[in-house]
Image: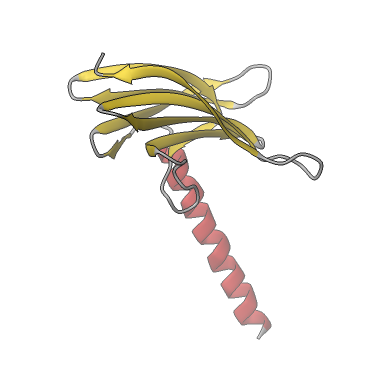
Length: 142
């Protein structure tokens, strides 16, 4: 029985390791495709003060690429499994480090696709977590 538990635990840890490895590959180079837009996420070094990894994020629509900036943390596309899309969000990216971060999302507003940046914080025992406070940063196609 103990041997079965040890083997099962080892398999669980190995699976989690592969999951983390796949996420780190996403932040190192490969564009992430979602519908009409392609997220491009690349590792951009490390913040010298906080030691947080930095990720450069851009979005492509058609032949045009829009640079969205460099963000603290590891960035990954929202997969609707571990993270759900925010209300009205068509696709998005989470940039997360040490309990907080930022979310970049594409929202449909009328016939426009609008990119917005929002805040993320996991909260604490005293304060609730935060996800929202989205502000428009660009309209795709303008």
